[in-house]
Image (cartoon, rainbow, N blue to C red; front, side, top):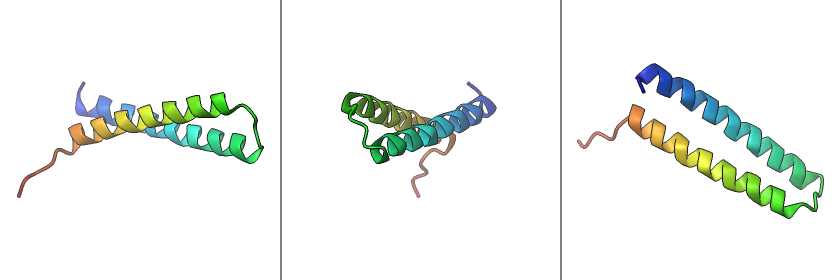
Length: 65
């Protein structure tokens, strides 16, 4: 992937991460009894966070000073 593709993918992943956060919040506030669904959403959110971190590290590598 080139840098432009990585940036676009990063934006999509961050958007999906925010959407999942909102969905989890809404289910929690509504007092949803479907704990399995909430757990699945949280797990998906963590996977997205990992993917976001990988792409961010690729775009902005650590520089040892």
